[in-house]
Image (cartoon, rainbow, N blue to C red; front, side, top):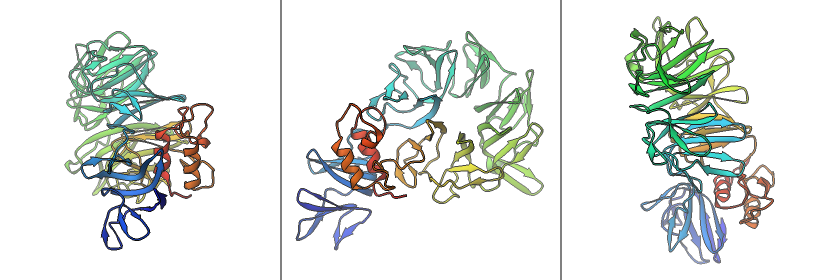
Length: 464
């Protein structure tokens, strides 16, 4: 509730006020209620006037035919999106110290123009040259260069078929590239492993998996009959997961290990057409290789879907309490987390923590609508990316979100994001020198701007 232009404005999720059909925002002139502006579809959590304009924040989907992406500005009687946020899905993460690299389908991230790949530094987001012309699925560091892989064809306008490297100055192809999408990268010792849907890479027949030694590609054991989606090294052996059913000509449903000479299936093998799909995630944690995807183990008449473990001798069930597939693993504060299309944890959909015997609810909530595609720890926070639109306990956050021990936007540390915090940020709006998160520089990019206002409005009204 705000006084704006000498009228009382209210916001929420309502669809009428005193019998007047109006959605999410309305105003009172002292005599009657009227619509504040055209209807907003979603939940308006906060309203504010700044520099003569009215802004709304919350879980905002659209107004009429205009998409809002959770933040809106009133212009000429209509709600419009100010142009902040990501314009495409973020799909890949790489953390190196204070630096965070992301890749995906986007052309902008926050207020930075960046084609499919960007770097977060303590000074904010920055583009990496001219970027790439198609989706990035995986990022890795190898030989001092940043390696990006996916389904792009050019880097900075020059041919780079689905895999390229950035040397901090320019992009260049990694050999002649791949003839199909690359989904996974794994640097290990003096080799970079790549997995995907390609049949050839660097002019070499590889069938979905190959190794780069710094100068050329080589196949690994004859490859797979279908795609590779995940890679890991466990007890010195290379593991590959995907939707394949044969590895090196040997039957191996969805997962196999390479012993240095040939591919070996894991026993017992995954089964059952009802869970057809594949292995999408592999992660070693506390001496065990965790396996996630859309599959099932069968023991007698019992089925154990979506999550399994390899202990070096056998594949075993890992919990029985997920109702849908796992898409990725990551670690945070020493614990293993998974994200997937499961919904059985109430207010934390799509995110779960492994407690050593089963998957459990996480207290800081999950991600909305769709699962994350990658998660990692960065500067003491958990960062998740993917095609979701909300994170935490329903906060708007399209395609990327982070969770830490504090409440985003609680500038005065009173365990609530309220008008005191909003006014403090607005009082510092436009400052570029000597500002801190407590002044309103919530994204720590060195100034207080609309990006910070969006973050605060997204938490407005939350108490903890």
